[in-house]
Length: 121
Image (cartoon, rainbow, N blue to C red; front, side, top):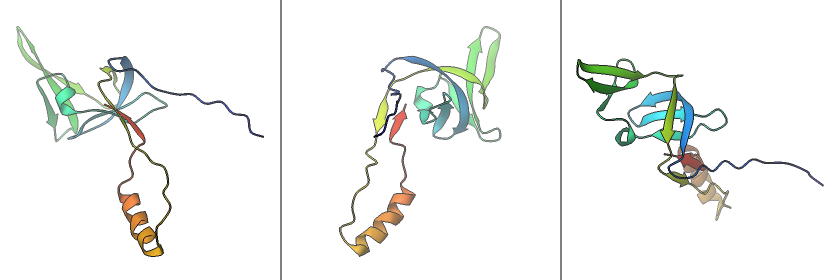
């Protein structure tokens, strides 16, 4: 007999969450909310105009004011607010091998294509 509790994390679309910037790449800004790290803000969803600074490896929002343009850097570890616009579910259930030969090649492909089962965008 087993007793357990579990927590289900499922934010609704358009919900605004608070997280910390975990890393930045050409793919966008990767955010963590502590217990969940599979959050990606793609470049097209960032404040515009935005650019990726290769030297610093961070995204920069070019904020325009009456005094001119200011660069606001999205530094790692900074707290940000973001809106959930999409979610992705990937079935990661194990599948049985159809033959010994197929299982060897599938295992190799599976290691290379490892994806998170649930991702927020």
